[in-house]
Amino acid sequence: MDSQTTQTEKTGSPAEIPADDAPQPQPELLPDEAAAPADDSAVSAPPATQTINFANKNQARLVVAAPASDTASLTTALGIAPPEIVLLLFGDTEQTSKTAQAHLVQLFSRGIARTLAQMNALIIDSGRDSGISALAGQSVEDRGRKTPLLGIAPAALVTYPGKKGAPNAESLEPNHTHFLLTDGAEWGEETDTVFELADSLAETSSVAALVIGGDDTTKKQVLQTVRRGWPVIALKGSGGVTDQIVKLDQQRPQFISDPDLAEIIIDGKIYAPQTSGSIGAFQRLLEQLLRSYDANTRESTLEIVWQRFAQYDLNANRQQKEFNRRQILIIALGIIATFLALVQATINNSGLQNSNAAYQMTGQILHVVLLLIPISITALIAAANRFSAGNKWILLRASAESLKKEIYRYRTRAEIYSDRQTRTISREMKLHRKEETLSRKLMQTEVNVSALRPYSGPIPPKYGAADGDDGFSFLSPERYLTHRLEDQINYYQTKTIRLEQRLKRLQWLIYIFGGLGTLLVALQFEVWIAFTTAVVSGLTTYLEYRRIEDTLMRYNQTAAELSSIRSWWITLSPEEQADPANLDKLVGQTETTIYSEHAAWVQEMQDAMAELRAEQTEENKKQPAAE
Image 1 (tube, rainbow, N blue to C red):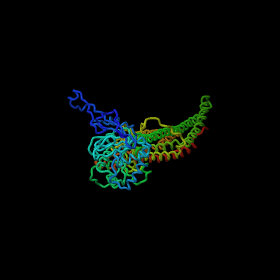
Image 2 (image 1 turned 135 degrees about the vertical axis):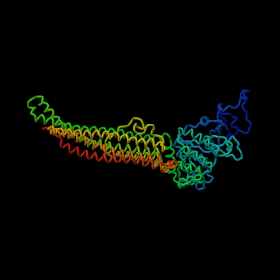
Image 3 (image 1 turned 180 degrees about the horizontal axis):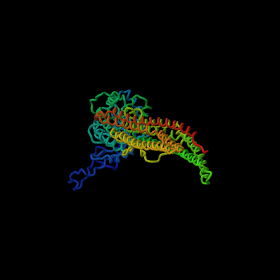
Image 4 (image 1 turned 120 degrees about the horizontal axis):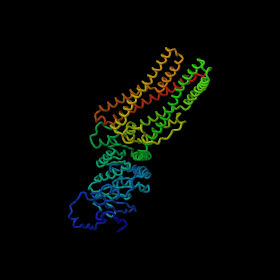
């Protein structure tokens, strides 16, 4: 035999892949085996494998699938290292113009092969030495054969060194690294095997399809891709069914008579770069698209944003606690100062400090304390103005909620994250840019002069997502309704109950101390009215800076608006709910309503902070001093 002799490996039966036309010996059956009926539960024979040597000195591993071969055995027989990215090539160049074919040569070499050479990728095509399979093989060879090429074809329709095929058989492309031959007498019958293998690889890899030209077989392959939720890159200008898909996608008619095309257009993630367009732009699109659909990258992009949200949420809570403690302490010290000043005045007016050493000591202590309290209040107010815990709390909370808004828009693939608006820029890139913009703006505020403590808890954080929501998976309209819309309705309704209870308690305390002041006047203890007035003033200040009443009204309004959105969605027919425009409206109105509530809260709290700062500065000048 010459240098193209087929070398049969020990794996598999030599009878399954004849090396030449010589008759092959058949395996001898034992008597019991010969008589035994066929049993579907019997273990299938392993697929036959061999190495074929092409004239260009390239070696390829060839596997012939046995009738009962499963995907696992085929994957093992192929011996391909698990890829991170799988690119399926569908179509042909028969209806592609010569000018477009010239562009395809550069597109494959400089765009596809160069991009995939930098990734752990696998290309799957028909393996024929013509059309796009030949383009793929030559382009990968030009780039140093860094990317495995797997051709899947019907065994009866191909020929290769060591095997003579039928008169109409096509040669296998000599730069491929692997081939898988299936049953079938027509091209297209290998499609099921292609998708079974791709489904298996998709468990650990991202999968996308590149479509060029093509016919009805290509259309069915694209349909199978769409039904699996994988993106489709349709090269505009390559002719055939590809241009038909691109035209329908970009000029969507109200009705598409072809049911397959209708499903592709409505449900598909179609990207349509121009065949004659910029190679660099195509390369960037291909890289962003393939990496964005990689399971690990997709998770890490969202995880980074969740991590950022959790960090802002953690530090917002920390600044809120610091601000509240400081404000409560300022109010409490003001009330205590008033009380002690009244005690001191009572002792002085009674003359007790002159008759008893204990009263003298008490008077001296009160004098020192009354000197320290105004100093302490002044220091606390100065610290509050200098460290701005309240403003930092507001800014961090606003940024955290803005990130959460983007997370839910991203997870529903609505509005700017919809398939139609992520054709040139992936949704992961858009999410990253939103996070980057929000973080940059936040770091240009006074938050930048404080340390942001890292978050080390679970992702998403405890209050980041609803119960039963993992925070990462795609949200269908039904799941969005449950995990976002209804969860927020329950949140606002629960908060309104708590706010009402807190408001009533504080108002009752104000009424009680106001009535106590009136009682003291009646009992001729007018001097103590100053104390009850101080308590009422402190409680009123707390109500004002916490904006409890305003927040209660705003929460009620938000809950009512969200309930109206839910009612609107429920009244839609299934066909209307399937309309992407209505999904955008559902998500858009929900997130806008929630965001508007937060924006109103931010504005109110900033106004409250400014008023509080002015009031405390003025009140500090009026603090009672020791006589």
